[in-house]
Each structure stands twice: as structure tokens, then as C-alpha cells.
Length: 90
Length: 153
Image (cartoon, rainbow over all chains, first blue to last red; front, top):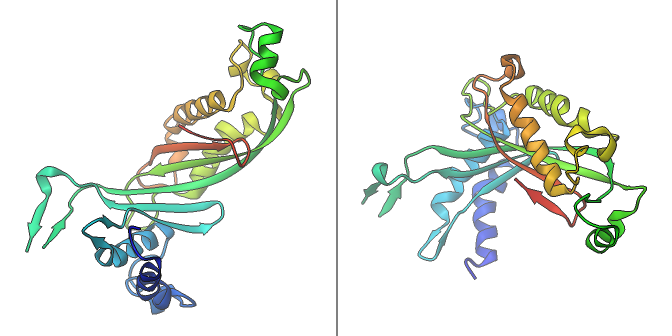
């Protein structure tokens, strides 16, 4: 397997579900006190929370999809890597 | 050590629409027997219907003022005018000009026709994106003929 699903579930719970579930995003969940909690911004924020926790030698976070309704969703998969702008930080 | 990625954000917004149409799969390039063996039940002379599901994906910058990549009102109006008004409740073989000249309304061809209609309307009138700061790009079209038959273009 790429990741133990139990571990994935724990990471998603810690980074996304616990801080966001049953919360008033605009008031209780930064950065949505200053950024509009559209589904676009929610997808980007969730990616940014999960991405550092989902980097392994053999895999990484590929994409986040957030459904606002059955008929509306946003996919986000980070920023395109470009060879010229890659910087390796230690 | 980590790699910092700098570049263009990859984001799409997808909106789902529904329409119902009928069609008959019958190619003038094939004999009656060949049509029957190629299309089977879909060659029934009286046609048959589907409840199609259409997904339209758009991409572009997220407007910092609205937090949106596109105003849904603009996207809905554009899809309604360019696709749903043409397809919903229609007999494709008889009512849609794209399929009057021998092009068989398979969902492959329907997907191409819908993408073409969307592309044509997308920038046909600047008022199409009146509520959107930067008109988004058409990132993809997916059409479900049934839950089992799905086409991306």
C-alpha cells in the first residue's frame, strides 16, 4: 500500500475534520476570518494543511477534491512544478 | 530537505448539469444488418432516451475579491444557453443540426459537439462573464450517458 489508511484517516482528522467540522468557518477557522471560505479557497487551504503531512519516500498527496454540493466541486493539486523555479531548501 | 514548488496553481471548479434527450444510433455508412450488429438495441428505429449528466470544469485564477474562479451565475447561463437549450427534451437525430448530416449521435460525438458549442459561446460575447473578474478557461467536459458509460473530452 501507499499509506496505511488508518494513518491517512488520522492525519485528515487532525488537519481538517477536527478543526473544521461543525465550525463556523468565517469566525472559528483561520484563515477564513480574513479569506472568503469559498470552495476554491477551502480546497487550497485543505491542500496546504495536508500536503506537508503527506510526503513519503514512495508517495505524496496527489489531489484534493471538495464537494460543496453534489453538483459543484473543486479539485486542487498544488502548483505546477517548473524546473526553473524549483528551489531546494534545507 | 523539502522542495518548494513555484508555479501556476492547479485548480478546477466543476459544475454538474442534467438533460434528457433521445437518440437513435444508425449510421448511413453501414447497411441495415451492419447497423443492427454494431449498435444492437440502440439501433431501434424509434430511438430511446437517456438522462445525461454533464460536468463542465473550468480553471483560472481565484479572484481574491470573490474567492471564486468563476461566477456560477455566468457559468450556468452559458451552459444553459449553449448546451441545455439545444439538447434538453430533444430528439438528437431530428432536432440538433450537428446530427442531421449523417453524424451518429453517439455519446463520443455528443461530447465533441458539446465541447465545441461551449468553446464557441465561451468568448462570443464579453457579457457572458459579466460577473467574473477574469473569464476562466474551459478545462474539461465529462458526459455520463448512463452510470456505466462515461466520456471525457
